[in-house]
Amino acid sequence: MDQVKFSEMKYGDEEDYRFLEPLEIEFADQAGERVFDSLNALDQSFSGYRISRLGHSVQSATRAWRDGADIDWVVSALLHDIGDLYAPYTHGEYAATILEPFVREQCTWTVQVHADFQKYYYAHMLGGDRDVREKYKDNTYFDDCVDFCELWDQASFDPDYEDLPLEFFRPMVMEVFARKAFDPDVIKAGTRAPLTNIGIADERRKAA
Image 1 (tube, helix red, strand yellow):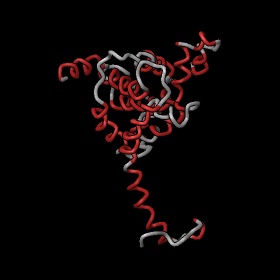
Image 2 (cartoon, rainbow, N blue to C red; image 1 turned 180 degrees about the vertical axis):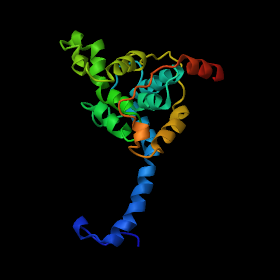
Image 3 (cartoon, rainbow, N blue to C red; image 1 turned 90 degrees about the vertical axis):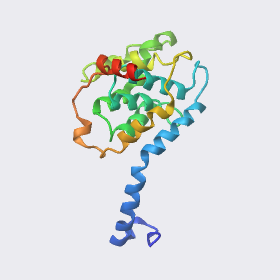
Image 4 (tube, helix red, strand yellow; image 1 turned 60 degrees about the horizontal axis):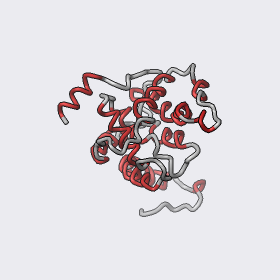
């Protein structure tokens, strides 16, 4: 059997769907590679900054890594702007949807709303509300998103910063996307993990 027999799903039978199931699983298991490879397209994002959107993403992840962040934070920092090309008005939600099955809820939520938190740095200069993030003040992860933006997002537009190569992060992305989707032991709803770890950061610097 090379293809299903039906042309409308309602006419499919058990044989059809048992044939499709392993193909869908195999395709889903390759999502990490597709997501990672799609990062290169961020070099086509709008210009004006001193580095490309891909450079910004790599720099954010590099800073997270050097701050001793765990793998969930590092991968989230790398992918937080992946939606810029296809969902410029909802890029945080786009990225969060990609990450949601595979990282802590804390990281997903931070990525989802980070654009509102970034407005703290510029919205008031354009006639907007820099404090729009305050609508989230009762959320468990509010302070985490503040720190994410301060430490890694708003700070990562420096052309002179020594970024790690993009390929350095491929194994981390592959590890995260190889997890069982929506595993409660991964999602850890309500759990907060620190963004930085001085001890781990020192170990990484020594190993570099």
